[in-house]
Image (cartoon, rainbow, N blue to C red):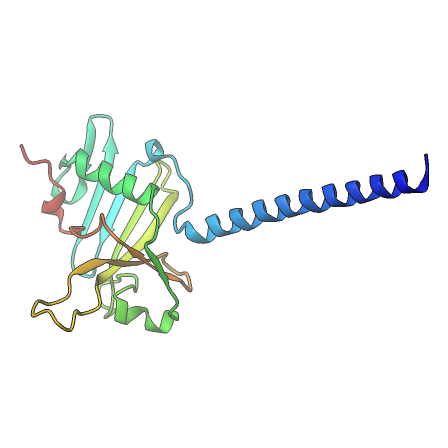
Length: 194
């Protein structure tokens, strides 16, 4: 084997190793971006046994029993299975429309503080638990976001989503484009109506 062939083999090996390293690096970057985009960790929707929806003034506790889903605050009356399923699926497949960099000190202006019955600037806490009470997913849904105003239109700006953050996290705040417009902690909103 002459020196020219040896140099060619070394060059091909180096290029191959470089390409392989770039592919590995790109996969890692894509994985990190996916983790950053994901607000809620993956969970099995079939493992959800309790859904808590809470504000400073109202609480709805939805619990899975052998006979079906019930609303605890109403003396275990049947709960709306479709509404519960929709909320669980929305949280499971949540993708933010936009990330907003704000500090936790500004969460009250977005109504993203955890409700405790008295704190101002509290949002709506949504917590999903399994049958052992382990939290599978939890978010605070804040106030409605509006599109920038159209200066030539006489109509007010349209809503374009709601702000969302994981309780206790420093952010970022996410914007949910849809699915949380009618979220309510009022118990009667979760009853199964015939």
